Length: 34
Image (cartoon, rainbow, N blue to C red; front, side, top):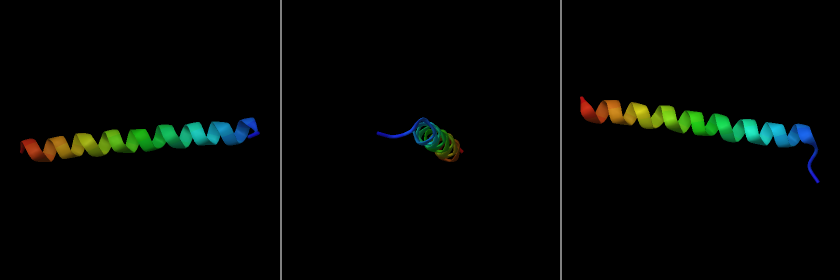
């Protein structure tokens, strides 16, 4: 069983990855419009 810290880090990483993907998508949309 994972400890709480590892779990928190996993959640945080997942969140950060999502954030990066969202930013990347926004950039793609911007470049495709222009």
